[in-house]
Each structure stands twice: as structure tokens, then as C-alpha cells.
Amino acid sequence: MTLSMYAEHRRRALAALETRGAAALVFTNRAKTRNHDAEYRFRPDSDFWWLTGFGEPESALVLLPPCEGKPARSVRFLRERNRDAEIWCGRRRGPERAVATLGVDEAFPIAELEKRLPELLKGHAKLVYRAGADEARDREVFGVLTRLRALARQPSPVPTELVDPALVFHELRRFKSERELEAMRRAAEF
Image 1 (tube, rainbow, N blue to C red):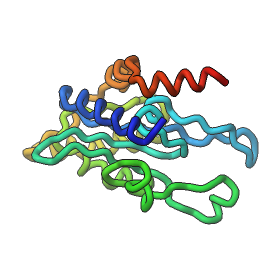
Image 2: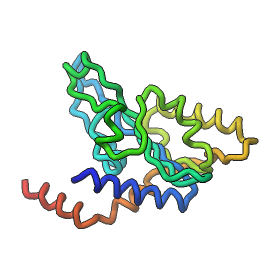
Image 3: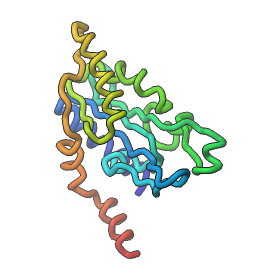
Image 4: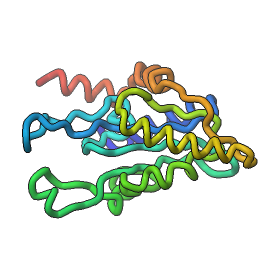
């Protein structure tokens, strides 16, 4: 599957989000420790993979349909490059290379998500987010939403409703392009 296919998936998702008046926050999975210093083989979240094709843990994608005169954007949050960690666990893309190599509009370190999220979500009345999958992330996201709601008197709407990602992304994922069908046929040959 090619980078352009994931860009097309994001374009379709942004169109669906625009009709709902929603932004989306999609996390991938975290790496899980098997025992002491060994991890299970990493598997990205399926919705995240469909939208990005990105296979590193601890990443997030924010999809922002057009609102308040701003164009549609996709913003990626991912781990920073770290030479010592990369020696043991493999190379990291890093935010500095993400825009050019992953086809997103902006990229930042995952550690900045909580700081940047309030500004990104302003203007959107709903947030597509899978609650209940990760308690620590829920605390972070709900904390941001609580702070945003305290600013509700501002002219821009803020998310006051959560939407399950399955209602948006799973319907889109049901219909495959010819390119996706060909990739599935190739995979089935093995």
C-alpha cells in the first residue's frame, strides 16, 4: 500500500468528519512489555493503520476538517528521535521527518499533544475518540476537554460530544478501492 492510499483514506475520513461537525483524535497502541525487558511484537491500532500506514507505537493522529476559515489538516504526534532507544528498539521517524515522509500537514512530538490539543480542537463541536481503551490517555484527553469547556463562552465551539470512531471509520473501511483489493490479493498469495 502506498502513501497516497493513506492520504486518500484521510481525505475520505475528513469529508465524513466535516458532515458531522467533528474532529478526530486517533491513537495507535503502546508497546506492551512481555517480561522484564522484552516486548510483545507491536501491532498498530487498526483505524490508525488504515489512516496512516504508520507502524510505530505511541503515536496519534488528529484530523481536522475545515472550520472557521481554516483548511482541512492532518496533524501527527509521534515519538522523537532518540539514538540510545533506536539502538535497542529500532529507528524512529521523528517529527522533523514526518511531514515529508508521511504526507501529513504538521507533526509534533507526542509529548506535546496535551499542550497543543486545545488549540487544535477549537471550532469543532464533536470529537471522534475511542474512550475506554487506555486509562492514562483518557485522563489526558478528558482533562483537555474539561479545560476547553471552561472556555465555552468564547465564540468558537469546543467539543461537547464524544463520537465512537467505529461509527465513522468502520463504515469507510468497509469499501475497498481497487488498489486496496490488489494489495489484499497479493497478501493472500503468501
